[in-house]
Length: 538
Image (cartoon, one colour):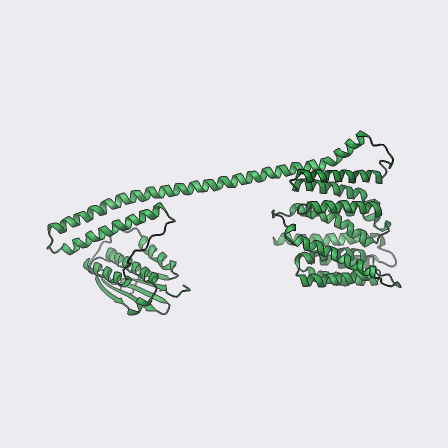
């Protein structure tokens, strides 16, 4: 983006300098205007246009001062500076704040007043009106384009830049040699010529307004600047074609077509192709209407192509949306199928395990393994309940699990887990600080699940007889969890593991904004530490 912006700035500088050189070339090398001085003024007038997009207000102030200077020393560059100042005021109104726009417009009006004032003649009220009007018109145009009416839905402005550049090149190159031949000041003629070309740059945004402007400029040229009449007719036809491309209404397109026909007919009379009293022949009418219908037909054709392209893009987007929806539906169906398979497999084995434990407990109610068998049976029943809940979530991922009607206290769950692991053979030392009860329930529940998973990992990887110290205390920044186990007392072959336990604990801690670290300690055992924030900002 930066390279494109710099290229545009360089192009503006080159265009401004070239514009001044073209309009003042006939004065170069005279006794009152040496070529070096004229070239210097061209550079002074053109270079600031490279900064008009970034700093329009300072550039407007500079051009106002340069306009006063060139007017006082009677430099031929004064007409170029006046035209560039008006263009700069339009940019100020488009980009700057109201106060800056007001100050720039006032300074531009004063500088224009100096340019309009003739030596030895009083500056009349009409002259002030002309000065103010010359500054206000570009300001109004810039402010209008700044509003919602001047915005395009398309982000690409390349066609606008091409239309504006081509329009200015067409109008200036076709008329600049005759600017001093009309009764109007040169800068006025030049400003209107540049305005006619630049207006094509906003024809896609404001097609009706630009068409009316081109017709008005054509009528004005017919009265005061006949050398530009043919160029103005070309701009009218271009504006009519853009109007037909941008406006959907056939009625308004017909109105624009008829106005363009009348405008071209007036042009043929003005240049003497058809005399004022000439007979209206059918062939002339057909030729005239065919000439005007060409740009309108091209505009309507381009509109149809654009509409077809937009419809195709909408169809592609809708197809992509439907394909995405179908893919999600397939994924949900696959998840439900997997959930059903997992439920059937795991529930079968867990249910069989619970039933066998219950049968063994019934067969030997007073035996030494009765408590362990009861724990296996109860755990199996709890696993089956959890499996059913997970199955419901897999079938509907958007569903939130219902909280239990009477949730157990997390500290009690930690103590129960420690007792269960102690019954399995671990030597558990539990330390639960009394201040833990003041922590939020969500932090305590997460700490409980992490402790349960940590104890399970110790039993799986270190085996029965391993010493474990579990600590759940309150820290300045939240809840501190520590699960530290010593080395296995005997050679132990680790049970199979999926590797998801530690990852799940880390994700649970991260969900609360906490941290988790796990790794070997200096005694040959394993240390798991977790910090869960309890503040509301966590």
